[in-house]
Image (tube, rainbow, N blue to C red; front, side, top):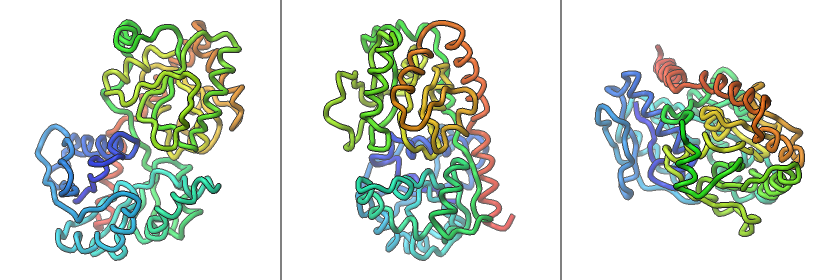
Amino acid sequence: MLVDARPLQGGHGRRGIGTYTRQLLRALVGAGFDERLAILVDPGRPLPELPPGRQLACLAAHRSGGRLGCYQDALGLGRTLARLAPACYHAVHPSLPLAAPVPVVVTVHDLIPWRLRGAGMRGERWRTWPARRLVARADLALAVSETTARDLRAATRIPPGRVRVVPEGLDPDLGPRPQAAERVAARFGLSGPYLLHLGALDRRKDPAGLLRAWAAARAAGLDGELVLAGELGPQAPPDLGGARRLGHVPTDALADLLSAAGCCVISSRYEGFGLPALEAMGCGCPVAAYRNSSLPELLGTAGCLVADGDAVALGQAAARLARPGPEREAARAAGLRRAAGFTWSRPAAATIDAYEWVLGG
């Protein structure tokens, strides 16, 4: 079984696809599947950090990446797979060969370029055009949510019987941290009920709406900063209204930030899964989000969902959740219960079952 680990070697390594790849490999090893597992890497980049346990075989592919990565894989990855001859190939994101000589499983995280149509997505649609065309040829597609599965069936010609929903899991290193507020104050100089946003500020994350929500939260009585954790990415606006930018934050510090935060604010207009919301719930941080895409199915009744695009309502909800009291405590408890159901053992078992199904049982 060959798993594509190249996202761990590039810009995706610190984003959602990198987290998915890292945690899936870790969970597959934990499930005892490592003896049958090899990873595909780019020979021109440093090897990614592998999960603890058995040393996985690293098999080099042709170099690919950048804006032409999907096109390079479409034209050249088939030759690499023919040379390596694995029993099956798992593409952890839809960068696929034009003709695959082995069975292919592909994970589909979202259909963002095709769901958010505007001119701002034109470059992304061009960059990922081969993926949209080729994903229907995969033997099996793993969608990370019911929303993504529905969007995948609508945007491609893949037969419904070749799509399975396999949600992601929560990093087992994330959880509520006692005395987190003291460590956050010492490390970042943060105090009070700050609002937290995780990840890049791409256009679909509605940066302007996030700032309006922060203003609405302050108007509702919140006396706290807006904290941006993670690499903001090239689409982030230069002016973020005085929000605190922390950049990339390692896992231990992220757990502290979430444990001490007043509320995690999700201003995204589309999520394929919604990992930041899951990470927040898993650390006991209340979540306020727009009601759109996969967020209702992920949060259930554990988060405070407001009308899609209503930044004022989003900020007012965040202010309520950040305020000590029964509503905050109920949201924390509900989020912890909800997150407890998203362990990585479940997607690992479902992924192994997918491999065996593709290979004929």
